[in-house]
Image 1 (cartoon, rainbow, N blue to C red):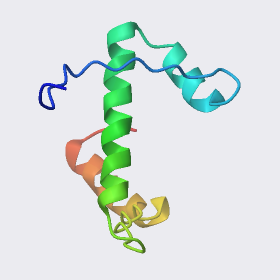
Image 2: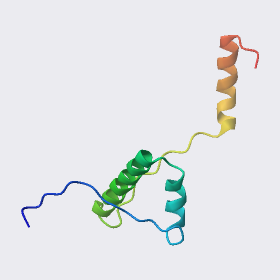
Image 3: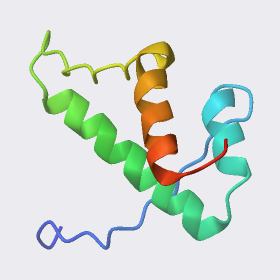
Image 4: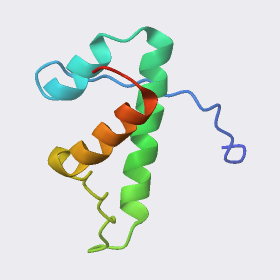
Amino acid sequence: MAGNRWGGRVVVQIGATTQRELHAELAVLPSRARAERLRQLALVGLSCLRRPAGTAVEPVAAPPPADRLAPRRERLLQALGADW
C-alpha cells in the first residue's frame, strides 16, 4: 500500500429494519443534505467517544415559569402602548 492516502469517500448502507430511526430521518433528505447529516452525526459520535467516561454535559437552565414573566410582560406591553 502506498502510504495512508484516502480520498474521503464512504459508502454506507443503512437498513430500513435494523436502523429504523436513522433510516427514517435520512430517507426524507436529498442526497447532499443526507451526506451532511451523516457527517454531523459522525462528529457528535466522535466527540462522545473522546469524552472521558462519566463526564456529564452541563444542563441548560430551564426558562423561568410563565407566571413569573407575566408582570414584566404586562409592564413592557403597557410601555409600548400595545393593546394585547
